[in-house]
Length: 120
Image (cartoon, rainbow, N blue to C red; front, side):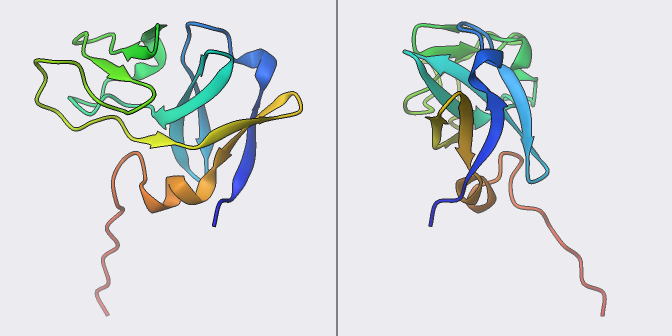
C-alpha cells in the first residue's frame, strides 16, 4: 500500500535541476519533468556518482561524472552503458508540496538491501 510522504516544497524544485532529499534514511533525487515531480535513486548506478550535480534535459537526467543518461519515465540507461537502470519511485504534488511513496523506497531502496548481521 502506498505511503506518500511530504518531502519538499514544489517551489524548491527548479526545472532542469536535481534536488536531493532524505526519506526514511534514504537519499533520493527529485526532478521536475513536464510539471510533474520524478523521484529516483540519487546515485548513478555506474559508480555511485551523485546525480545532484547532473542536469535534466528533456526526459533524461545526465550523470555529471561519466555522462550516462537515464530516462526519468522508465529508468533505462542510454545506449552503450552496461549498468543497472535507475530506480524510480512514485511522486506526486499535493497542494504546493512534493510527496514521494516511502513504501516504494523501502521495498526497493536506492542503495540496495541493507544487510543485518545477527550473531546470536
